[in-house]
Length: 133
Image (tube, rainbow, N blue to C red; front, side, top):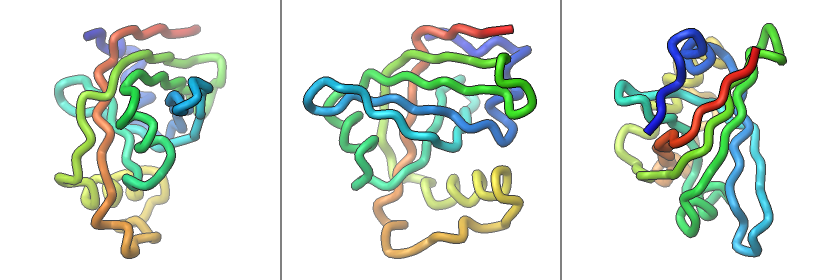
């Protein structure tokens, strides 16, 4: 497992949008802009609903990629290749509320609905980390 270098860790703590790439059943890439986070062990976290395409894709093929650009300097970036080690519902609703505080400056994610019970955290092990600028 590789770590995101300390001088780029701020990209995981700010309002940075990541482009999350998964693999479709036919082998083609599927890319989605997502909010991102990291846990204390250095795993990258993406929060989604289990029925979304990205969650279905990683259930079949755990190999993923992420590209995270600095909101203030698009030439400063982190590119990550890795594998999903876990999809968990534990803490997922609280996690999306935490992300809403960062990305939307709101105490609670405003789109809670019946899907909350199927919300998942995608826990990604970074195997290759590349930085730019």
